[in-house]
Image 1 (tube, one colour):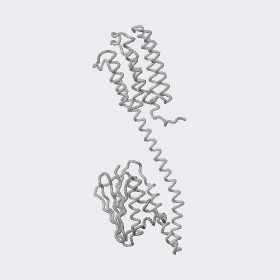
Image 2 (image 1 turned 180 degrees about the vertical axis):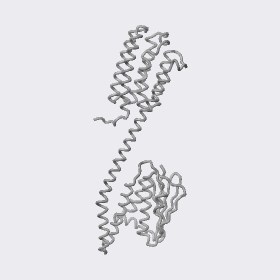
Image 3 (image 1 turned 90 degrees about the vertical axis):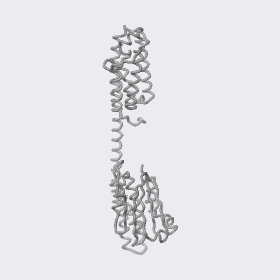
Image 4 (image 1 turned 90 degrees about the horizontal axis):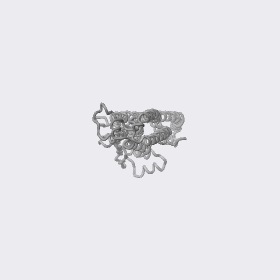
Length: 375
């Protein structure tokens, strides 16, 4: 089994080796046709054998996958340039001036294609420029007549087109993988939501209802069960409505839904946009703070929500005019196993990379300041 992930550009690598085979056949025909005209025909035949052997090695390496790395492609570019420059050694200056470089421009394009598939259009065009420079050195002058010498145009076009095709293939593959992960995650959330709803939520609802009916000491257990039931329902609801990554949500719109006779909400006139996941979690922390106001601040306590867009961060302040929290009460609640503040508020903000600041005291209400950075 391969330890490497599948390469989305594999079809391009395979097609490139078909082109390599055809270019080798063309180079063979060219070699047969011009071998007698070369100044050193025996050396030309020997170098052509090197060309065929190297082409076979490259084809094998790219098809099997172990050659699809920068070191191998750079080696191919070096070999191609060296064989082009060998034209000066196997042929006369007059022959080099009147003909294309000895290994043929078509065969040399294999290096451009390999670089483009591996590293994209920029690398492909740079490899094409290297081939063009080597060919120019062989001829001894720069030919600006693109009508008669289209080598540079061909090399750049091939590097650009093949490189963009490789990039597109990899991008499409990454998007398909992301879509598959999102689909699997959504299905798993639905499965867990069904299990939680059919199991834990129903049990908590039963305990809460029966505890209230029995009364006495079980009323406190009923209250705790009801609290956890509501928390689980919010969690399931937020999971079911989670949006794809990258989408934005107006935090103000989420908070305005919490306005009531006892809750005043103040938000900016313009939308305050955050990533949907961040906005949902920030709002959930604020809602948990409101739940605490309803349960602990007193029946007549009012809550005030203020949303502030600070540019590089967003802050939600939740203030109430209730009885406040006595010193040490939060630590006592944690010791009793009641983790609402520690997990639902502080824990959420820590997970978002933000902060949660609590200001309170007996008889002076409470104020939460929830801040998240913009990413």
